Image 1 (spheres, rainbow, N blue to C red):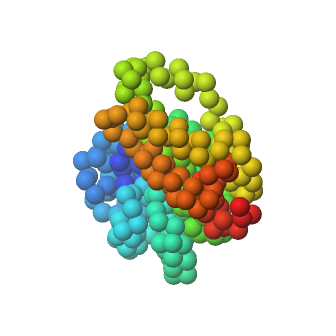
Image 2 (image 1 turned 90 degrees about the vertical axis):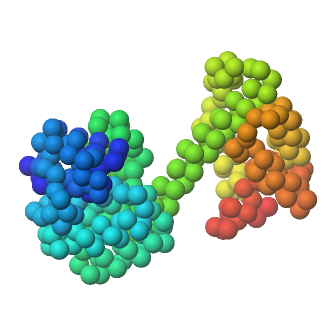
Image 3 (image 1 turned 180 degrees about the vertical axis):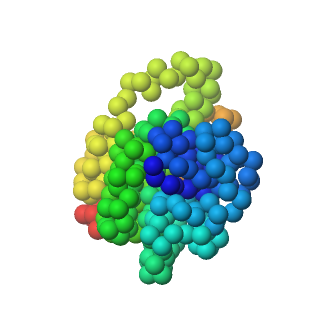
Length: 289
């Protein structure tokens, strides 16, 4: 039986703690609002009054918190009770530069800290599904790997660069949020012509998002903007979309139109739609257009 602690028992943290208790771990939980943590007592989880009390005796300390500022506050509060060989596994979505600084500082001070953001929702956490991403000291990953494996279907280690998992977490969330916002705009276009959302879902089923990403994403990365869908033609279509949506609020398309207009003004109108990513991939050394 492994003694572990969960600090932060919102929707995801409480699901992780519940799953750990059901696997047979000895779990202590803490939350700034203690009533949220006390809901876990029915699973045999002990609720602590302070972060320091929560981590006493724990071999692994899981953080599932709001942001960088809260992570710093909670780590400072837990340190008086932290066991010398305990590993802090931080699942919080955080700012990459701050994550890198925190990892280097804490490990230099002898606090074993590893950033482990996740692509896991509460329901998936209860079923040990989804992905855990890890970056930071290899020795800490090796020591924590067997503990992390039962938590998810996939544990992906990205190496010792301490901010890399944080970067990929934001990239993934941008994709999730962007897709959601784009689907909303699709429904807005349909609503502008009195087509119900349920009927519009049929059109979305025609597409394979993975194939679209692979096609245009690879063109962006390679800097190959040989046209199969010219930017000027795509911009015309976006105009039609916005006009058709009418008074419906749009989340994404007006920004897309603005970016297209800027690129067309630079002389890229006859190139492929993938040129919309020209400056983003160029910043990391991709082949220039």
